[in-house]
Image 1 (cartoon, helix red, strand yellow):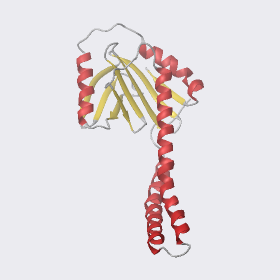
Image 2 (spheres, one colour; image 1 turned 120 degrees about the vertical axis):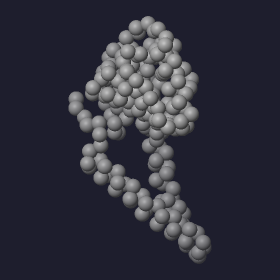
Image 3 (cartoon, one colour; image 1 turned 90 degrees about the vertical axis):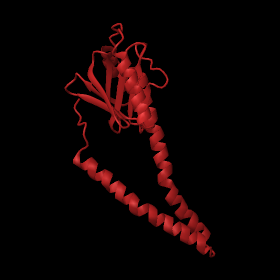
Image 4 (tube, helix red, strand yellow; image 1 turned 135 degrees about the vertical axis):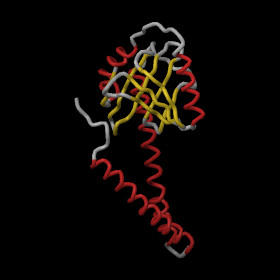
Length: 207
């Protein structure tokens, strides 16, 4: 099953089209909503409500989209996790409901899940031997992996540098501990193969 991780030219074009459409659509709706609200002539009240509804609708749709995306991300995480991976509170970063990085400092396992595009997710279960280097810059934390198909994984912490630095410190401290070999990368890979049936999503797994 092949899929391109990077955006295609058409996907980029559609994104730009949506952006510029919103830049034109929203100000126009807002202008007419204010205009008909302030004018307050007979019949303008209903027209004003229509324009206010048109203005608010994209934000409501966006909120539903984000909630749906969050549920999809959580379903993938739950499908590939197991007793080998139970991250501690504070050791999880979720960025934009698209990307997840969790760290289990007790068992020495990590899980990365990222949405490529709608309905498609990259998954990589890791242990301490799966990566070579960890770094952070600003709010972005990056792990260099040993997989040439997915040589690095990154996530930006919504809370800023404070949170990326904290998780970086946890991972660095883990390098000085000895962990049992729980075979989490292999088990996560196997679970990802069956995750499509459980989640209805397309999952690409890397070890």
